[in-house]
Length: 430
Image (tube, rainbow, N blue to C red):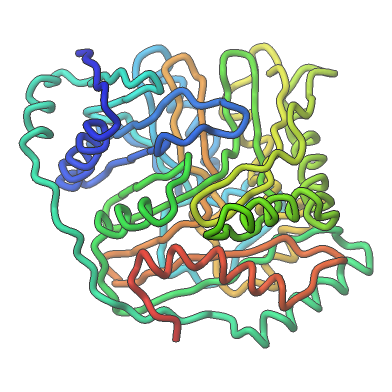
């Protein structure tokens, strides 16, 4: 079933009704581009919503990528698949472990073949993929948009500012010793015995921080509410693209000051050095999946502006090896270098040592496989996680630590990244 929506307002109304309609299902995945041009113009889908489950692939911590390959093969040529990869799949790719506590408890991996799919492309064409397409459209159009419901909660920091500064300085000792030259150190903010309305929180976060890789995902009693600005990897026919973000600066309310901040970010040798380190790592990751000599940096140090921040984004691409399974292309680069550091293996070992929370879905990826085995996955950052049964809410933020890092400034960057999540939750920081 095809139709056309000509007005942005009509599209946004339809999105809200569709999101409210999806809440009646145990499992759903909502992906939203928020009418924002992706870095380097690689967007194809404006909005996708997948609900219900005809079949599932659920990770249990062993051979999960092999299970996913079989699942993708099963539906190749027929049905799009939606789902996520958790950060701790790294333990199945290298000799790594995760002993830190996990209060959210997302499975290591989850994908599903949906009962119903709604797609809106960047030309405002929409499609309903369902055996009950007419009924689904009627249900959505009859769904009222619920009012924003938000009960104030109190968020605590797992690590104090003093502890954070101490750990950053310890990480810098490892950098001086040559163990790593960049490490992405993240900290958790959390609330116990707290109840939130995931849909209202998602709407508020979208309003505060519209981004091109936003998503709202539910698997049983667990939710991800995300305003991610970053793409992990995209496969389009025979090309792979990865778009790491490294480099952040706040927005200003006045245009003149805002332009000064953009120029400051582009001119920052520290930020460019961080970005370049990860670009080199991504080039190495892509080379495992691409034809020799095809990996190239299509854009270096691109500055892109979002509502809360300016970001430095680079685009790396390559021609995929003929016959390589799409899941192998993902696993060859997983987890993404922008959320680990370099060298990647040692950075991940040190992350487990210095962080106090198991990352779980944070630093993982959410996205889809198309029937032709193309795919697109984000990086799970700027995201709220919620275990409804345990009444546990958290989000994590981090930054890249290098030799030139100033601990106090890195802490302020973490608070800047946390600001939209705190506001979306209506939370005060204890």
